Length: 589
Ligand SMILES: Nc1ncnc2c1ncn2[C@@H]1O[C@H](COP(=O)(O)OP(=O)(O)O)[C@@H](O)[C@H]1O
Ligand SMILES: [Mg+2]
Image 1: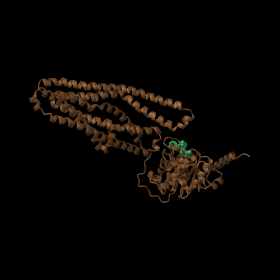
Image 2: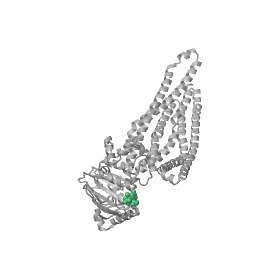
Image 3: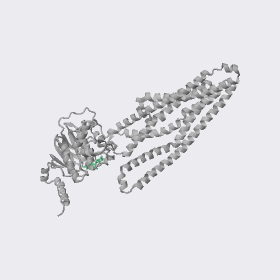
Image 4: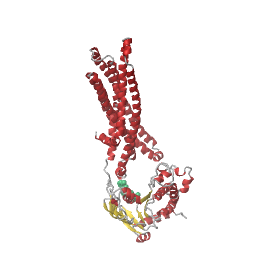
């Protein structure tokens, strides 16, 4: 129950909406009960009066009960309508509260704290589990609250006429509303859990399959993937079938108990009428009223079903939300940096799940306004430097000073303002060119967008598209070439207009000609900025003020291009590779 209590506390800001919705639902049920009970009494009384001859007919007051019937019928309709409006409004408010609450928990965890989850799994939690949680209010909380209150009020009303009849109604309501649903819920609990899990698996499968569509088609793996999804689907359908059998028996039981309850009440009430404890017309009033009373608990079987699902979803959501932060963000206020110099002294960074440190005692300096390169083979620890600078991961030992303050003292959001990053993996959202640019500066004007595109040398291409800035780039930018995608990333960097520019293998995956053009156009962006250029190739390094050669998380040597070349250390290995490569690719004569 702990999870549900937490859920209720999350909903607390909307308790006004929640309680008004419940109150209107209660009013609807009570007016339906009133309508039927009064009608039963009214019809019987009218019949009795009719049998009694003209005198009694004239004495009988038709008008008050008739007005009551109309009143109840009107209230029922109006309150049901208002109930729908209020509960739907409340549902949407709760949904957005839940989503933003979960997102706020998720964001500081990314990326270090979410490494253990697959993308589809997180998606499934955000979409499906939050939707399920949202059922809690409409389908669990409100029905239970309303059923409890309505049952007590209606049984109390019957008890005014006869204690035994009142208690009998309460007993039947309890059996039909609590015992029966608990039984079916117990029978279906394991199925429900399995269905939630299969659903989640299926979603992961589908998202994964979509993302890997290219590979699947190329390697003809479609049938295997399809068979796997079909198998999961079959499992799901099979369980849904078994669940329907259980719910079917549940509703049959409910119908049986409703009618049995009415009969018991009639049988109990007849002697009371015979002995004069009840008037004749009160008998049909009790009978019809008891039928209406069961409306109060009609939603409970579903509520019990949702109760199980909701608790499962709540457990899954809270499990992610309760993950300890990988490291604490600086509380602020943000330090005021002086010159934006960077100095790393004996820095060690180890990822949580790896045996060997990615950065193993790195010393490195980048003065404001200079251009510094970090050169190293794959796995040397270059991107880990970026992860460290952007506070995606924390360093365990050593000092990192940025602008004269320890990097740790900057809140991550504040720190990231100083850096624009262009990398091989700069992500393009499945949206328009415009939206992809606005990521960097939400309030950029049309002119600013075009200026950025011009510096990135992408303006002509975008202008040539029929939709212009509103051209859809496709998922992950599939509708753009590699070079164009990278240029969108550059335009973003320009829009952000940060004093530092980090380039993490920005030309990786581009062909040599595009690469040369791209590097040339990058010069315009580098102008006036501090540049950290990360690469595993020598191309473009001549223009750098200083080059650090990184291997296995350690700096092997550093210096400018000419010095390193003269020294003949590890750096020349890269130079030799390049020489060998150029010799290989030179046209043979
Ligand atoms: N998120 C991560 N979690 C665990 N290990 C990582 C992570 N990122 C990188 N590594 C490991 O750290 C080492 C350095 O990686 P990285 O900094 O990405 O190298 P580079 O960018 O030079 O190719 C590698 O051994 C890599 O496997
Ligand atoms: Mg890398």
